[in-house]
Image (cartoon, rainbow, N blue to C red):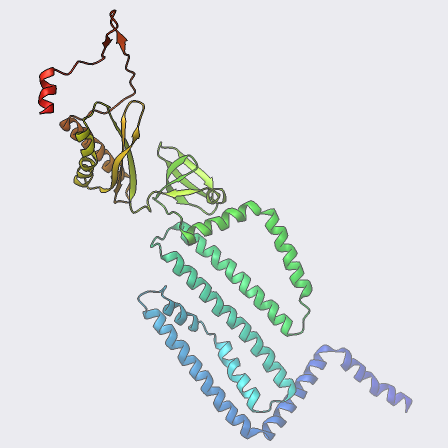
Length: 396
């Protein structure tokens, strides 16, 4: 009996130590449980299967309908198009698992099978949520980028990078959530990813700062290719916005290359985006100008500005200078073209010179007047005396 007992116990130990036999035995056990479940709850299973099939059909119809609306949309970046395109990304695995979860809830599924269904449903739901979020985020970013109406190599490269970063972040979070729901301790994984991210960020701090600055320029649009900007002491035309640096052409002809991060730290004046340019002309006339002519100067300046296509703001007397009676003219040129603005200021300036010449108004310049006395003490005036008959006519 002892020998027989020893012989019969040996296969059991072999079965326990053989993983394939253990898996086969477990699958056979699950099969028996499934058969007994279907025999016992066939009616509930049939009803749940019909409901699951209807849910799958409905979800498939909604997905096809949403994809069709998104494809036919005239504006692919409209909010409706983004929403429909997002629904069109509903995966088949998610639709199947939604139906299976409904069957699981209605048909009193045995615990082993129910646990498998719940695990698969959790995986499908988390992955589907990541897909939907990815589509929404990228759609909104593409909508923001398309508002400028310009597409170039920089935009294409930026969107490729943004898609990669968004996809990696969302699916990494999804993987962590799935592992956490499966009972895996993800604390060490999260800590490792955090430490690795910090190390990479510190090692490539300069590259990443310029990279994100380029993305900020593309999305926020402080300037675009072909626009004239001023930063620091430079005025230049933007030639190319790269992923690390921006190339500009100076007004004196040199090409300026500056890192994106450093460029955004400066105060930038965008001349192209101005709807108008305000110009101020200080004008000084000589002190010998008759008061009636000085009083007419603001109206004369207004006529000149409006005749030359500018918008008159104000003009008037502002003070007594050392060598001049000072006036000031403010007017606007309604244009965003720097060349047209420059030409408009030129026309107004030349017209003022011509009009003042016709009206007998003299521009002042720094002068000094010396008064001397004759040997008899009589003051010698530095200008010709007014004839007597002229003064009499003036009094009349």
